[in-house]
Length: 367
Ligand SMILES: Cc1cc2nc3c(=O)[nH]c(=O)nc-3n(C[C@H](O)[C@H](O)[C@H](O)COP(=O)(O)O)c2cc1C
Image (tube, rainbow, N blue to C red):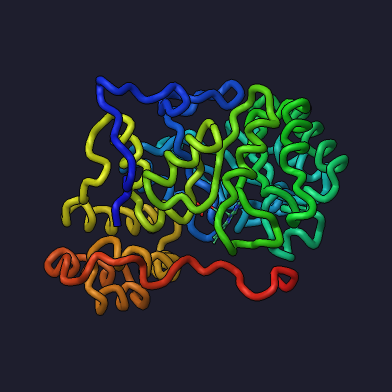
């Protein structure tokens, strides 16, 4: 698979158009070093994954998994775990959700008081357990309520407040452009827009025209495009076509953890299609587990499983070892598997992942 099909890397003679700079970007008073962000993927984008990606280079802003505002403030262990961070885990925003305005406001303030530097409000989650209580994408159905929630949150904190949303609830209610304009007026520092509606779930392809309409709707704040970016060419195309200021990559970062580094290389006119050495790939595998272990100890054996299918194909791990990565029960066992991977690396076709991230399926009404 070519990551840059149809693209020419910029060179000193062919400067990157201003539109496509990879230079720092301001999100409120924060300066984010690159234009390629990590989109939150609940269950994946934990501290360890964020750190191991940052170590590869090129990643701008990362955001935590979505955290329930009320659970967070009441100190629920699971929520506190989700916001755990580290000096190397910067810049970071914490994503919160709730349908209750006061809860979002309180959680934002709570985060600011504890030194967090950015809050992102989730208005895109399609899952019934989130939308059922008025949160996630459901907020987009109540523009007045959503605007009050956002305005009150912005007023309560000094740190930048951002919003991540979808195009609308369904294709008959495309509310994102109007909401983006309102949110900007309310003082939001940036908008991330996933180019699908809630009814679409994860089906179909991302609607670049929909993202472009959101870019056109705001005056000055950055718009971060999101959806289906799995290659360098996808990211550049999204920026060129929509004019978005940055791109958030979710599943693409699992398919290829070097994606952010590749994008940085592309902007520098360097080789974006480099192949990480076998040593780099095994180091990445070990490092991810090591960082996970720092935070979760033995529980990492379970947590790591869902990464095995992604990494198996990407990191040249023979199928039998990928299978063992789904079943290991101790650190010693993992270390043994990693050593075997190092010995037998590449005894497998570099194919696409054997199992894609599980997204909810069936009728979206039942999610
Ligand atoms: C397993 C999974 C978990 C997700 N969790 C979140 C989340 O916690 N917060 C959020 O705003 N979006 C979440 N999303 C949506 C992604 O951030 C992103 O908008 C979507 O996957 C499209 O981008 P991608 O094609 O780059 O993955 C999730 C998506 C998936 C597949």
